[in-house]
Image (tube, rainbow, N blue to C red):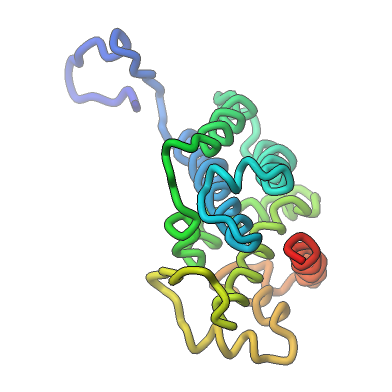
Length: 215
């Protein structure tokens, strides 16, 4: 909790509350580590026929995708922000393996078109700004691309929910001559990376990797 009170406050530390000067680093860590990896696992799990988050996370190849994303790209981007990020990563991924939560891939996979620009694109952009090719992070939008391709074909095992889904535009993307290029050049999703030739090449590589994963 942010230690920003107008007057005297109770001794919240006595009941286990951690007081910090700013919650912003914690919010950013949650968005990029917990929320983004959660969606990554849901998209990947759906693509290989799984129903629940815990079984998807316990699949070695999916766990490795999420772990690499956080370890190789997110943690270096967030830097020394006062949080033990490797421990937070491990706690989050372990929590996702809890079978008693019974969280579904359908619930977590929702709203990808708002999640990518808010939760994933910032790490992609910051990696390029640091001179690093975001190999691990690029797997996340690649998973979503193939996930939406299945939606387009009507082969998803459930109804996909997305508050800003433009169904016609998505169908047109997959009917285009080069769907990956249309996707990677979408400024609403990727901002300035939409004009980055290396990012387009990277997305082609990672989409191919997802096809290999699920076939």
